[in-house]
Length: 433
Image 1 (cartoon, rainbow, N blue to C red):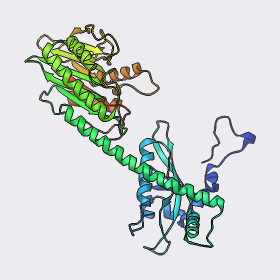
Image 2 (image 1 turned 180 degrees about the vertical axis):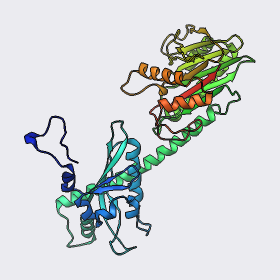
Image 3 (image 1 turned 90 degrees about the vertical axis):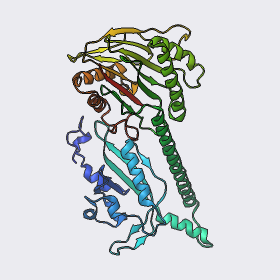
Image 4 (image 1 turned 60 degrees about the vertical axis):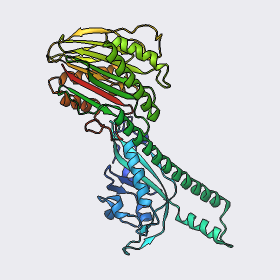
C-alpha cells in the first residue's frame, strides 16, 4: 500500500504507507468487497466489534454479525439494504442511528444491545464500477443508554451537549424510517408503471420470424414508460414499424405513450403514408396533455417493391444495414417533434430502395445518448455494432446490439423487470428485409 510512485512526489520525499494510515484512523472502518465479504478492518473496528482480524477477513459480514434472533431488531436488514444501494448506485449512503445487537464473543446465542451510526462509501475503478465499500461506524450505545437513563427519572440528567446529540440521533432515525417508506412506495409505483407498459406494448413474441423487438425500462424508480414501439402488417407485402419517445417518465408518460401509439397506429392504417400519419398525430398531440415535444419515427416497408418510406418527427434516424455490412443512416428528412413547429403543415417523408437481405433498425435515443457525450458518438457506436453483427438473425442481432451499447443492462426478452441499467428507456426494432 506504499504510494512511492504518486505523481509529483511527496513533500520532503516522505513515502506514505496507507496501510498504516488505515490502521491509525480513530473511527472504526471495515473494508468490504462487492460480494459483501470482509477484506480488512482497522484496529478501531477490531476493538469495537470484539472480533479479531482473522475472524473477519474472508467471511461474509452477516455471517459474523447476524441479526439478534429475538426478532425485535433489523440492523442486519437495514445494513444490507444500504450496502446494496451503494453497490447499485455507486453513491455514498449515510445511515441513521441503528440498533444492531452483537453476539457476545465466546457466548453463542447471547447478544449485547448496541447502537451505531454507520456510513457506507463506495470505491470506484476507472470505469465507475464499485470495487470496494468502506463501512465506517461510530458506536453510540453509551449515549443512547444515557438518554434512556435521563428519561427514566431523577439523577439521570444528560448534559446540554449530549441531549442535543441524542435528539439529533432520534430525528435521524425518524428520517430514515420515512426514507424507507418512500423507497417502498417508489418501488411499488415503478412496478405498476412497468406492468402498465407491458400491457400497452405489443408482445415481444412476434408472428414474423424476420423481426425482433426489445424494450428496456430505465434504471430509476420512475424513469420508465416514455418510449414505445409498434410493428404490424398493412397488407400482404407491406409492414409498418414505429418507435416513439414521450417526454417525461412514470405513470403519466405511460398513459400519454398509450394514447399516441394508438393514434399513430390508426393514422398509418388509414393513410398508409408515414408523413400523413405523423401530420395527423402532430395535430392530435395538442389534445393530449403531456404529448408535446414527443419524437417519433414511422416507417412503411414495401417488401414487394423493396422500398422503405419513412418520416421523422425529431427522432433519431433509422439505420439500414446492407448485405455487405455497410450501414446507411436514413436522415434525408426530419421534421420538428410534436408541438415544436407549425403542426398544420404537412410532414415530409423519403423513400429508399434496399437489396434483399438488408436489415432495418429503429430505436429510441436511450440506446445512443449518454451524459456528457455528443449523441453523434453514440450513433457511430450503434452503426459500428450493427455493421459488425449484420449477418445475425434479428433476435441475435437485437441482443448483440444491446450487449454492445447497454452492457450493464439486465438481459432477457423485453427486459421489463430489471431495475439496474440505463438512465433512459430504450426501444429497439430490428427487421430483416
